[in-house]
Image (cartoon, rainbow, N blue to C red; front, side):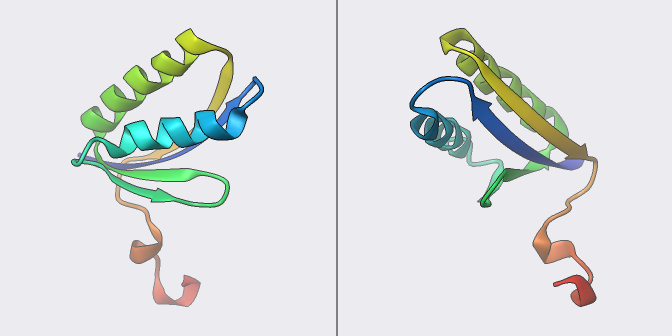
Length: 89
């Protein structure tokens, strides 16, 4: 099943910008996930199980290094700006 996840990371430490960039770079290492970095969040599109496995591991990595908050929205279809109805683009 294809899914879309919108995720925002809020590191609760100094140097938050580099922690967010590092998190996104690690996600981009997986070539089976489409990633679109937006201003306030990042969208991931791919197979649901793969997305959840990658996020589980990468979020754990950050939790073990320090404090962070992650906000996620998950939908069981592809939901990106390319799939919006024309009148919403």
